[in-house]
Image (tube, rainbow, N blue to C red; front, side, top):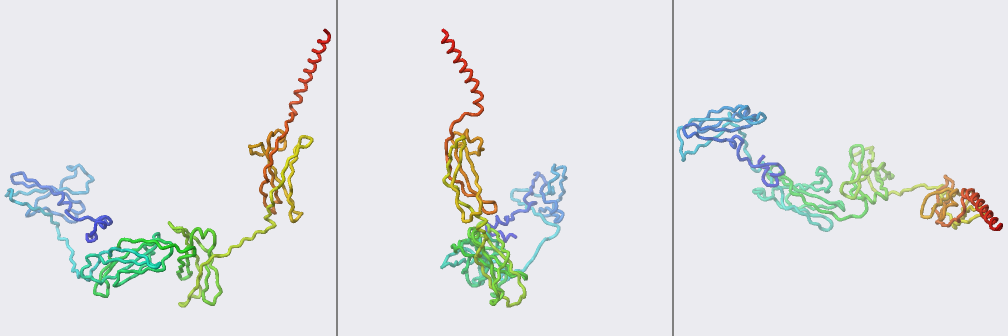
Length: 439
């Protein structure tokens, strides 16, 4: 397959390299004892020796024997090592000795090649793309060295979106031209194209396609928010349709596939619609399968994709949310209790009952506390919310906060402790006064 390795880039791709010497010839070493004995050593793959049985020649066959593995100290060596010797009669500076290896049988293959019946052109060159009025024009040149072919080449152009596989690429066959006009491409997409050549069958040539040219890529302009790339394929039971929409658009509206089996048929909707994200592009592909019956060769479906109107039933009488309580205030009562008051909103229907939730906490310390601790809070904030019965609605927003300062009062525990102290103090004062007046 050396003919595949024509260019440096192809060398790297196929791992090809130019054949220079075989392993036996590369390993061959010979030396002369300056008397009459010429000794040579060489190696070959053990499996190759079993197939070929190479023999070393110096004008005629040399005597050889295989070196033993214990002499080599490498039991895992895949090569057979040989030592050969021959008695020579002449030795001199001007005498050239040519060594050669010959297999036990001649290996060959022959083929008569008719040049123009076995053509594989080189890949087309200089592939480029230009935009014109929203369409795109691909141009290229015939490969260098296409001697004798002239204009007898036809081309296959393959193009696809960048993220698609080449197996799904669209293709065109062209003759007598090195240009290809592409239209109706999908907006907002990045495309890739390539081209290859082969001898034109009707010109007396035959052969096979060249390798593909280098790729060329380009981007199509954005095309708005409408569904794009609507396609349908019939698999014998279902008409499988797919289309693409922007991911952000599909997150806000629902698209449906509608169809008519005949122009006179009533429009039907396909269900269910499936969705799959596309890689590396901000689009999703949606699809739906239309079951097909009464198949004829004249069957022609009219299909369309459009947004659907979504509806959701929300019963107002079960989803009431009243305004938050207003005019919240706090008043100190005679028994050192605090009374919270607020304005109740009047509803249209008097039979709807309202419930309230109250929260209060120390100033700048948001935590729920009970009524029993309320008196000992120096600075307190207060909010409340209104709520209907559970089957009618939701909590209102919280009212505005109301802040007040509680008055200092003696704790009920302090009074019993202070009373004995007060009595003792009074007795001491009375005793001291009595002593003073007796003097």
